[in-house]
Length: 354
Image (cartoon, rainbow, N blue to C red; front, side, top):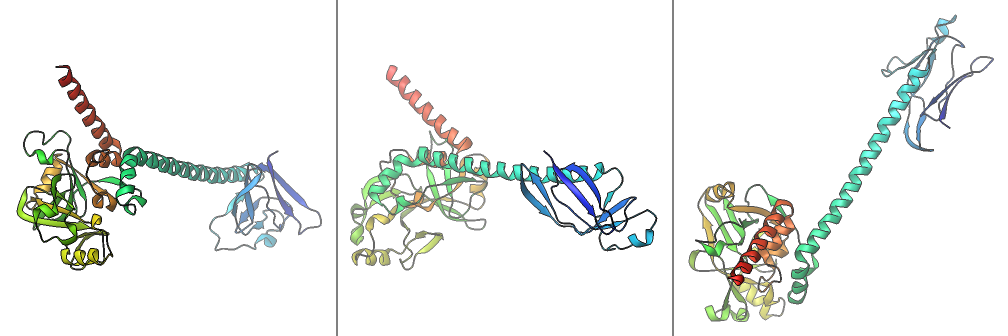
């Protein structure tokens, strides 16, 4: 049964009742006149009912004026109240306003529920995407550096490059010239309009270790050397995530560049693991505005990512880092990755058949 609205007129010797089937459940006032038109203004407590329970609440004060035989008695009202509700002999207008208010609240609640459901679905999709993209690599990382494997990897697209971001090579480029950029993932250690850009290729390990390159590496003799780019003969960069290393530059929160002597001391004292440090020979460089122009042409995709993706070892990964990053980014980027590897497998099949 629909809720019943009752206006009790009790100032006179006999009560008067007004009943209307609306979405409003309870509502009362004292009347100044037993007959005629009623003007309802101010603050009357009422509750909007839906589905058998009270889902909202609004307060108004109610003063009733009469147009009957005693106009003077109905003169009491609050002149400051702007939102008056006119109630005439036809109470249907009042009921319609109450039902409309109830509809607005129900629509708001339904929209809120839909938003919460959408957020839950997005979270489920995100976890599924991370599992599909990184599960195999995380299993390996748990054996190599367990602390890095504790965090959930993530990556999302950026419209333009910035310091501390990744740029990922377009899947259709660098198959001929500059093949070291083919499916490369580059960590940007510097980027501005005046001095240009500098980055380090993360996924180009070499067969060399630091001990074969130089004899002044102390505890880092077994650390692999990565090919960082095509610029800077003799330059070796140290990347790590240890905030205790002195004389290092924080590129972005949790990722540091340099501090070789301090890092050696920490490792020698047993306060740090040498596997937590990565060494890169040379780097990739761009002049002012050059990288932005290449991004606009579609040469590179830009992405923000979890620091663990930069700091982890990239040697003999079950899934290549380039592919993992694009799949974490999702959408069209994940499709680029799938398409690139499908084409690669197709080309291999054709060569085998020949």
